[in-house]
Length: 489
Image (cartoon, rainbow, N blue to C red; front, side, top):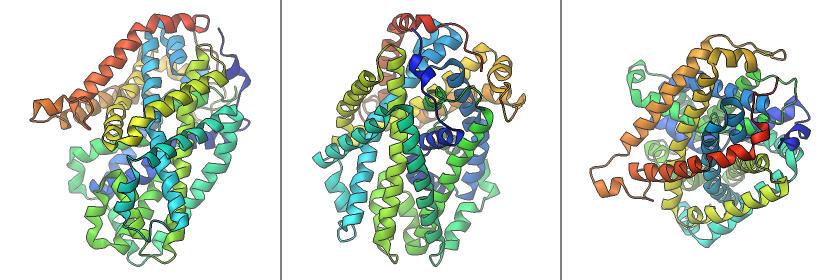
């Protein structure tokens, strides 16, 4: 079979493609996780390590994904088959499955943003105790309803094909960027905001020797840029034939991290201005605690707080929506590569997304468990992409798929060494996170659905990998006519 739809569907412009890619990369992790992780890991010291790993993880892997998607015109499964051969279909399937598993609970997060945006506009939150409002919403039927609404919104965009994805990106991403800039400017105008800026942008050389800061910075890059997820691979299928790959990767990487920095400014300047005595408690409250309990309290203490709180949750909603769209498209693309029509593929993905997202919507412990298991799984996905390049021949890959005739920016031999380093980084990250989750209680360490333990990762990964290995021949046969050398770029 041939991937006909991928040949007929293309982004209409480079601007539209970049906005769609940026929408994929910018998600809730930029707005709620980055400020918390930066604040709890030294502020300015964290930024130094974070900037290093932008170039030592995110951008190199984004380049790989741009190249493999555009070169093969297939999603992750077909891309690995065409690049490495049918024996490696399971690797591409792992990449696709992890992103899809994240989709199952990411729609729950988008549902939370919908509820809090509505509550901000209606005035429900400022008049209530924020933690009571949050506790009365999450893990209750309301969260199930908003989860379904979020999936429906994502499916609606993807059902329109590449044109729908591009149109949504052209509306949502500029709106998101404007909202974040407005919120950051408002935060900078608050009295005492300079303390937040100083904390965020002042590095301390003594802290740069702390390996925890470097590992957290690497993790943040692995989780919030979309590098190694397979999402860029999928969107790159729809790039025009003469489109560049390397410069686009730099634009996406730096654009994504710019949104993170603006988010850090708006959150930390507000914290240090409004509640400086509680700064440590606020930023250490966890993603949901920071966003859905403390943020409403912060905005309630500034002039026009209800208005700016609504803008904040609207920005969070747009970030979640564009990212969810990319995950739905990835899962649908894999099914289309295997022979399904777009309509049938989307229907299947939508049904699975609603059903498998229900446990996370109704139980916060299951949500945290899945976020832990498949968040760590992304690091194995990054390893597989780097492995694919090394097996193909890293220098050959660079000269064939990156430095092609239409490249705006030629990549040098430094990239070859960074790809080799990514293999080491991914192994170190996986080992560190699993080691950090070890416990003295053997039973707790091997609980299936408890958050952040070793056993739940190894058991769930093991089940998925066994299934994918057993299905490897079937996937290879289903894509048999597409197997071979990647297309000229």
